[in-house]
Length: 201
Image 1: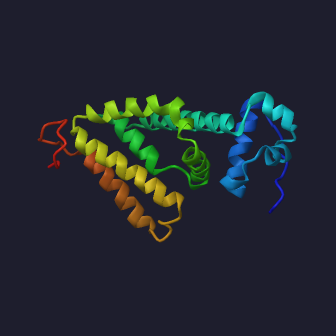
Image 2: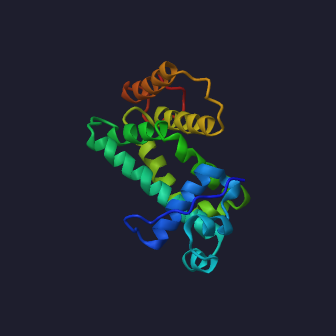
């Protein structure tokens, strides 16, 4: 295993934020299986006791990483809206586009969260309400809940395929075409009942 390079705090974020940042870097560099307090001590120069002061367990660390990750994705949605996404369903468009454009480096953080949640699903409890809010938004979309939910599920599936390296064969042109198709589905009016679960037109 390659030894982690001890990180400098640079502009000195709070120690808790610094630990979370370095946990992300550690996962990106070495993989989710190497996220341990011993590895974090080596990475950050903070004693195991210091780490445990901020995060009482690895599970607490994972929950904090998940909350930070959700916050980063919400900030990305706001950035996309500020860049000019507008019209009906603008927020949904920004969420989907953000999902489709997650940097490959951050997919490793996804892997760490998924691995931990697979063993302990309750780790996701603190953010379940976020997904309930998203589901409500999709259901009330002007293009119809069925279509909006289908696009979101397709975007999540795309992220998982990228995460597992199963889309490495996809060309840049194919990627751009897929994203364009997803955005087009969010633009096309749905003349069916907006919340029907039937096949959309």
